[in-house]
Length: 212
Image (cartoon, rainbow, N blue to C red; front, side, top):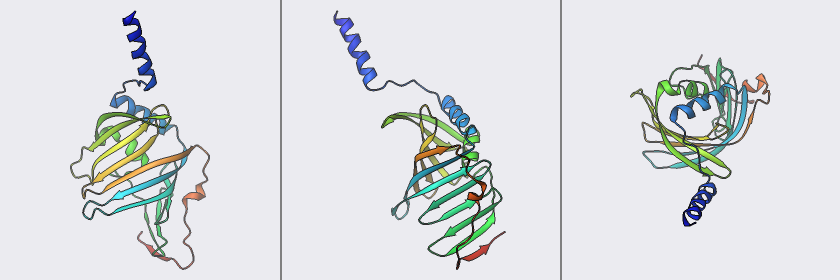
């Protein structure tokens, strides 16, 4: 009887803490990649926390990310608006009243979702750090170290939501020991975002610097 009661207590505790399946790095990576492949467009709110390595100054701001395949992005925050249609890039600073225009260049070091996720196994050594509860979600944490020792990124941590297999948080440390943490909220997927969202018309009085 004592053994039965003991077993029941162990089972109850396991259920109470939300016992999770053991995932491998390969399984998590493949599920994230398959999830991204099913996304045509997405819009998300995000927050960014930056801690500069040399000065230890910290900054926080929020913004909106809109993306559409292939290679279309619009990132809007109080400090800057960044827009690309996959061919041209507009980087607008409302404080400086200036927009820089250039050709969109994507290479193996680009941290766009397409390049980052599709090249994840080839470009990074991955380690599974474990998981943690966040509200009703369970987040699986991966540590990523670039295989290229010349990479600007020193290391990354990525928090992936089990079940939806969406990236919810990214923590990046660069060669200057600057730490950037991005947290994603309120993601909307496949809402048929219009192409004209990924074009930019400078406000009147904006200085235009064309680098093409």
